[in-house]
Length: 499
Image 1 (cartoon, rainbow, N blue to C red):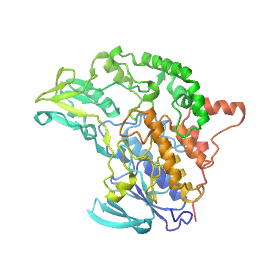
Image 2 (tube, rainbow, N blue to C red; image 1 turned 90 degrees about the horizontal axis):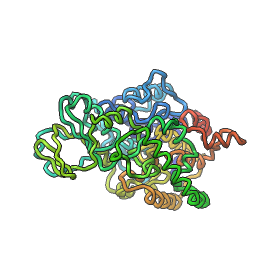
Image 3 (cartoon, rainbow, N blue to C red; image 1 turned 45 degrees about the horizontal axis):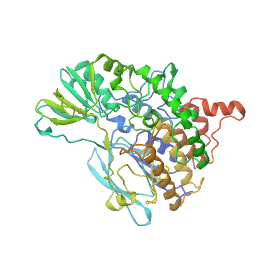
Image 4 (tube, one colour; image 1 turned 180 degrees about the vertical axis):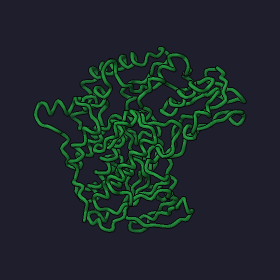
């Protein structure tokens, strides 16, 4: 990857201005690189600049934040999409990087030329004028959930007299008013839609293949962050793929203890849910905690399910008729509107066939070195768009620091052989632990601190905040928060603006 260390005139194209794009622009600009961030919307925010009705962050605001940039006290506990955009806009202005951003600009084509240079075709959405630009490096920050909506096809759907829509198209509660709404899915958008439909619609029926575990504010009577967001808890989860063979062996020996630990947590969580037994999750908690569907379950949703205002049916659609949905269970449900909370299909249509082949896309995602570098393509990185954790903004900042350290020779660049071996190890681990899903390659979830520690290790960063016994206790048992990790993030290779 030529050009590292000689930053003057080294142009970096960043695609997307969500949390990943803002973090990347901030870190690389501070390193002296000439960054240009292309964003199709008129402001920073990425998917939060245009999302479904009432969309909000699925984690508390203390967890969805950059380590050194706290939210205002007035911000909602679960940030609305406009609050996320306002927050990112403030970060852009505070760090004086607005000149890096080109809003209302759509990247329509990407090609890698001889020598590794990237040629991008971009369209100004205000003037409808397209132009070509060249860059020394390309960073994809267009997000895990900024792809093509997944729309399953159902037998007979063309006969339906109502409306079938994906959750990404939902823009108003009025669309549900007085209607019999059938919601398909168990993710965050489906749950949000259920709550609105139960309030303004005539009926709300939710169809799920199976119930998943989700976090609540407490596990039993213990705050969730004290239980879940610690390195001790990470040790209870299946080992991260890069863990040593000694650690993995010791982990196997503690299997009975871990089994009892998670069964106890499940019992405590069920006391919080207070759902009928038929709606209890059948999967193991330790598996679901690494699943992309993990989110913080709203109290109102649980209350509506318990009261029957949301009718959850663990079945699928067999057929759609003019005004009804026939379920696989044989039941027939009246419907005026069907909302698909069915997720996304990862699309990479900006690349030509040569790049697509080199990315080696598989059915469970794109496997990359440290979830950042595709080994078959030089001068390219993915920040945020191929790694999904429980605290995404922190992950994006750490990834950006890691990339900057590599581009400035502050840490060695791995060989292609090293990258491919690391990816092979990752595949074997995740495919053994995690059930098949289209995001398996990118889903890290509550393994996030093991992942962050891996990146810190590459940068030769000390992850211990204090020495001695108290430092050891704090390291393993103190809740991990973005603010608490700021001290470690600041130890990453210095970010002094190059003159």
